[in-house]
Image 1 (cartoon, rainbow, N blue to C red):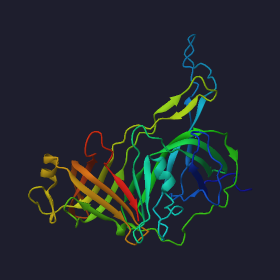
Image 2: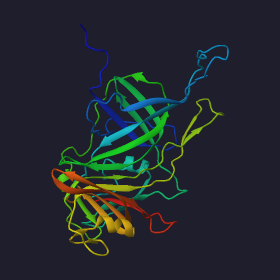
Image 3: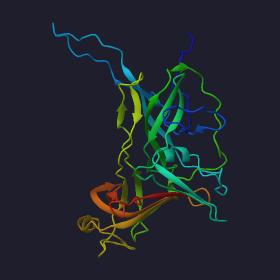
Image 4: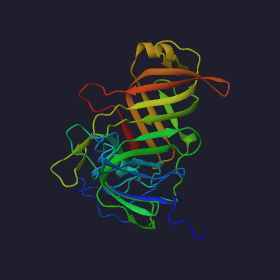
Length: 341
């Protein structure tokens, strides 16, 4: 019996910032590889779809279905799952963490600081009305190649064990070419000698409380990326997407502490009930990794505890906290910043 014609054992993605929206990019396996970290059982890393599936409804003369017309608006969506890997050397004009193109397409601007000994890149939300970054992508899986343009991304970070925190970039884009049979190219991934920081290196500070016993946690930017733009005046019907607002949130499961007084977050712990009732704003910081040029840091200056759930964790009283992340004022764009240093 011959082997199966196609399998799901191998997958790869190339991606690059687009110079023209939805036009795609010329991509190289030697420079544009995006390292995936996935369980290995995905049916497909990129899902095919259509804006209009061609369904004509029911036949009026009977109870059956009306024959369909051709679908229109070739669509693509999925989630790129990876981890943080720093360069291990000082950040410079041509030195950046491999997740940078995806972060920019997830709605972040980047600023480079080359101060000697403290080089870093800082990522802040792109302001409303500013130019947005989109990606051209090639996805290789199931023995085929998908070509995508106009991809916008969301961003999330999750950690629940000692392995590297999982970084996910959900995306929506346009299939700008039909799927073709293609083998996975020999993709080059940068900085393979650098060990990605594990979950045990995560440092979480909740207001004045820096000693929480953390079971798990997540950050979700919750950016709207599914606002589609159908165009009846275009042959392909699909004009892309318009990203919308974001509603970032933090979640963490921590061991419950002794109760503390106002402001209900001190060096000794937190009082999650009164902190929830007071809706007091407080800062939260998140750091993944400890070594220079191998760290990812998140800063959220104005958070509120908006929900909690008291749970049991290995016979220990624990509390699952949900924090809303706010800007400092209605017109500000300062709810969060990320730093690689």
